[in-house]
Length: 121
Ligand code: HEC
Image (cartoon, rainbow, N blue to C red; front, side):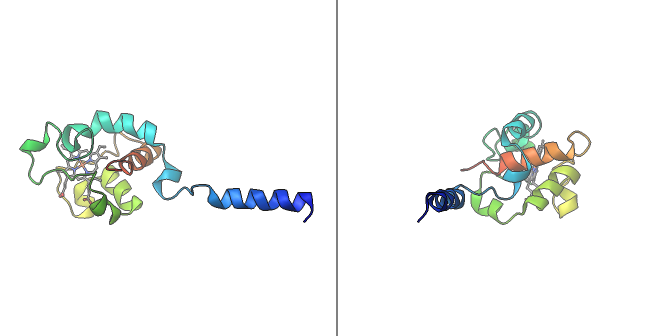
């Protein structure tokens, strides 16, 4: 095999082995999302996402555990985006989950989606 071919082959193998970005990870920045989450969401959903924030005790229904990987797997990124932007009722859930579209721009919502995908992992 010629040297150039070998190099090409190695590059292809490396590219295939690189972790592929999927879903929200490609759209949002989880680090920026964490700052927003801690500020706006943790009072109810808890700093680790388990639904145990200080305000949660008074709520019925309780805020979702965003760290429940099994449950979260069933929700698409678009669903998460929608419930954060437009609130619980937009996806048939409680109005206690408020709409955040007035406070977060779309790219910031994707950052939060990317961050909550890291919870529970
Ligand atoms: C005032 C308390 C409160 C705050 C603040 C809050 N939530 Fe919620 N959230 C809830 C409650 C209550 C539910 C459960 C609604 C239900 O199951 O009907 C919920 C549900 C959710 C769900 C699950 C939706 C589903 O389909 O099961 C997601 C995702 C979510 N919240 C994200 C967020 C994010 C991100 C923020 C911050 C931008 C946030 N929440 C702020 C109370 C809150």
